[in-house]
Image (tube, rainbow over all chains, first blue to last red):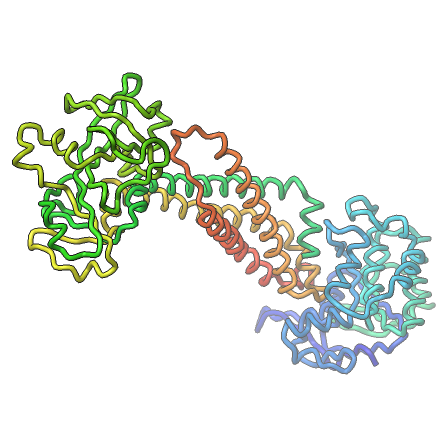
Amino acid sequence: MVLELRNAKKTFGEGNTLVEALKETNFLVERGELVAVIGPSGSGKSTFLTVAGGLQSPSEGQVMINGKELSQLNEKQRSKIRLQEIGFILQASNLVPFLTVDQQLELLNKVKKNNMSPVEKKQLYEDLGITKLHKKYPSDLSGGERQRVAIAKALFSNSSIILADEPTASLDSDRAFEVMELLQHETKSKQTATIVVTHDTRLMKYFDKVYKMTDGVLELDTTIYE
Amino acid sequence: MFLAWSEIKRNKLRFLLITSILLLVSFLVFFLSGLANGLASMNREAVDNWDADAIVLTEESDKSLYQSSLDKDLADELGAKETAVVSQMGSIANNGDAKKNVLLFGINKEEFITPKVSEGDPTFYVQNGVVASDALKDDGFKIGDTLELSSSDTKLTIVGFTEKARFNAASILYMKLNDLQKIKFGESYEMNKDMVNAIIIKDSKWNELDIPKDTEIIKAETFIENLPGYTEQNLTVTYMIYFLFVISAAIVAIFLYVLTVQKISMFGLMKAQGISSSYLAKSVVAQTFILALIGVVLGFGLTLLAGSFLPSAVPVQFDLTAMLIYGLVLIAVSIAGAVISVWTIIRIDPLEAIGG
């Protein structure tokens, strides 16, 4: 087990203004699993992502990452866990504007250990088709290229969990499929747990499980394969 | 350092602007420190050159050399290790080409304040011969010049020059005590010939000396501080320098804050990925340090360069130790200016960057 939510709940406000953004949720991703979370906007996907990713503590219940109980930790400790255990691929481009593609990854070498070796990195660049871009700045890249670099960054850190928020949003179908195949391959070969929040129904064939989020309730969705 | 330097390289123009402001501020600070030093020298270099410990003046003179008048025999009665008497008179010296405000200092040449002659005859060999401050050379005075005085018919002859002989912003002409007393008192010379302005003391235990009731003995430094205008002038320039420190801290603070605010979402995303606030804060501090260091070093070079082109009339005299200290203070206050940005970074909520 890599990521587990036990009776986790996230509420905002009090009394009459109380909003249950995430209703009581039980969720489990094992190593080597590629999981999708789908749902309309405003359904609570983002809240789920931030709670699962250790960006905020649940109001009730527990979040376990690699056996560590997150809700007991303060922001500084959670920050450390995020750095070591989680690779984020975010909708907002999470690239640093004044760093080249190479430097984006170099930055990770500065702040944490156990990243990919130079050889692995070279292979990763090839898999993502960004070898030629390594000296470019984000402003010189297209939306799709930026997204691929963001994915490279998440994979480079050898995290045990990958949290991806709409990773294929700015990619054409071919690229989207390639990226999903890469995520699938990494998930299986590195035995990571990958959670993808997406709208994109073209991708469903890649997932081991699909969860559906409706009004703060997360449920396993079996209808998607029909 | 990695983030700091990468960002500077990527956004050269932005950082060039702030560095150039720091350069100008440090230039001004260095220049003012040179001016403060130069102005102070104009007032005190003669006294510093005497290497005296204390000075005896009449009490009613209120520490002013000009207003003090005492009997020179007092020098022997004090029992100090070394003493020197000074009789002083202000005048305008005219060599036919140039006129200059000077101070005539009548001294006994066997006493310790007698100037070391750097150029010319080391003895006051002629009657009314003077050893002049070498600052007068810049005004066109030469050895052998005959000087007319504004207040007397007596003519003086420059027999030599000495270094570091300015007092209260005027050049000193050292001469034999008796020659001066004759000029100073004219017809009443006989009655006043023993009256001098001050007795200079060289004795580390000067405060144990027994002095007559109507006189006072003060430390050489106290004497200098009480020179007309000296302390006021010094304080003015010093306040200007201190104010520049505040200004540079404020400029750096504002600039960095604006840059930081622009990058809030970027910092938020980095924090979301687990990069610690302290790493980001260190990067901002490192950046400030790099910019301040470059600005101060360039300002230092520019100051020395500008200094070499200055006409000698500008009383700027660079003191490298003082400049080094001011430079370090500038870098320190610049880094202090980064504090607001550091605080802003610490307060950024990574959650908001993700839009959770």
